[in-house]
Amino acid sequence: MADQTPTNPWKRLLALPNESRGKTLFVAFATALVCTLLVSGATVLLRPIQTANRAAETQLRLEALLSAIPGMTALLSSSDSAQLSTVVIDLAQGRAAQEITPETLETALLDTANWTALSPELDLAGIGTRPDYAQVYLLRDGEAVKLMVLPIAGAGYNGPIEAMIAINGDMESIAGLTVTGQSETPGLGARIEEPAWQQGFAGTKFRDERGEMRFAVARGPATTDYEVDGITGATRTSTAMTRMVRFWLGPQGYGPLIDAVKRGEF
Image (tube, rainbow, N blue to C red; front, side):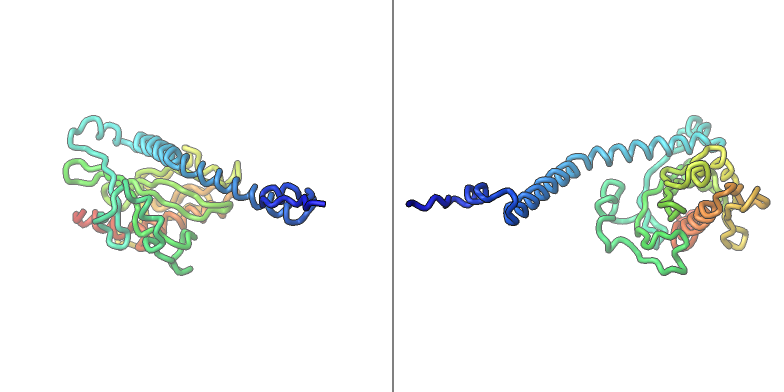
């Protein structure tokens, strides 16, 4: 009697019983491979859309932040020399980056060489590593910097908190803040997204005449020029906001840039 075993490998596989280990492993591997290819393809196709959506959302948040700062809308509309520009900053130097532009920043930050590991004592914001470059927004009226808008981030109670903070031209006080991302407890820490709470940042000083960092979210109502009101029942989120602002406006964050602007060197 002739041997009926198929010689084609594919046919041999199909001829195996469905409960055979080899056939089961092959089907599982093939399914995983197809799913991986589909997810990878979707990621590549959707990345430009996601990037555009993030840029559009950031622009809306920026416009809302500027419109909430007293005098900014009037300055932009009344002065022909007032311009809002985007600059990539070398954080360690406090200067404009020489080789990285807003268009190439995202690609540059994919390189781990462009990140700095932070020791626990320096990592007030709880971010672990800090990018060496950041995109900031400068509002100039002629040569004078009237406002800087700086992206900041830190570890909250339930996850990362992302925000944009605006610094007045005196480089000593906060003009405003808007939270752009958070996952804090609804009704408690999540109140950091409420405009009423964010408005308390306007005019708050973040360091004193000696340059010492003084900013804090108070445990209750603010009692000094360096505080904003605390959030009832959200002590950990309030502490996270304090640490995040202190880190990014300090020497490991935008401190060198703030000092350069104040000296008129930027």
